[in-house]
Image (tube, rainbow, N blue to C red; front, side):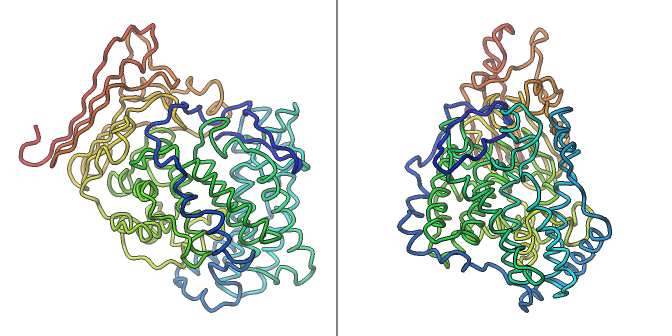
Length: 562
């Protein structure tokens, strides 16, 4: 994942290209940008925000400690959440020494630091939930311990994203220069939700805990967000990707809950809306996510979550779910569903939903866009059961999302949509497509170019499934290391075209870069037939000598499939 820039004093406004591109850069010539006149800001203008948003801290999307509404959570889930908190509390809090942070710079290993880092956050989330569902004061000490530890961390940024440390030629972060990456934003939002739920109870032994929590969120996220031009904000440095809505979804939460003043809150929210418009501008009218299903959860889903936050905080008055491209982005997930627990896994995506997926997000978004197929596809507790875990699963790092998930009332789902057409998921622009129902044959094909976010050199690759299970598969991606997002990315076998049912031409594989793309792309849907045709020749470098390589993929169903 791409490292952003770090914060500077409020007067500094910088535009710096990151020295290490975490995502392979996307080309400047976007595919079919839509509604570039800022469709979100037309609905969520600064004037409308000022008219309908409450004072900072007045928004209360779920109950505080002691509220009887916690009893709405199912008994089995409540027991499971308490048991998770008990298991976590049975061992010491994990340490994050300087040498562990420096390990990434020394060896390229990410997991050594990230495992205990995320375990701290999961443990705090579990403690907050246990305090909520039990009302037991014993969990408040665990919550305070977690808050205190997170506030004492020198940075909330992951080592792989800490660009300032590398710019300074060192291995460790400078606490005076807060660095806003994905997980600094996630950590800030976790603390903001913790403040909302636990409230004054945090200050029972000493008033410093809650004050420090709020000061750290402002110092590490809200202030630096406004102080500089982050490379993930828009395409002035490079085209945006999932970092934009992922971070903004957390910024909006923190701004609404913990801003020091209404003026600061409105400034932050208005800037976030403008940033989200920049993200939306990179999508075609079909709403297809080139980063794949796994990253849709941090792209389209986080956009939906951001819009839902504003809608909720305004009592329904600020509603951008009618924007056409938003409706299409919300529909992407079910369109990439193969069957059962299987999904199309182009790029760095996985063939199954992420372990911590919260299907209440598309469920609620489907209700707000009026898309019954999206609602039908979002099952109650399916990710936990599919992964063999009891209801409750492993807590996400964000307690707020866990609570909203567990308090949502949903019916059974994961319904099979009769067809998610090629054009509807991006093949009209040469990116990806599928035609399906739950039984029989399924085809997903990919065009596009070899500089997409989380790119694999896989233009023209395809997946075939039978009765909801993949038969001809995409190998996916391994565990992330420094090499995954460094110069050696395309030396990794899973990133190379030869491992994506694509030929070598005189021993030459496809090459990376926006110029290596499909051309003369056409797709058609008619009844039970779907077809994608594209010329793959430009995907190979000149030395391959390919003038034309046309691949046509057809799926025919019914009595006359030919």
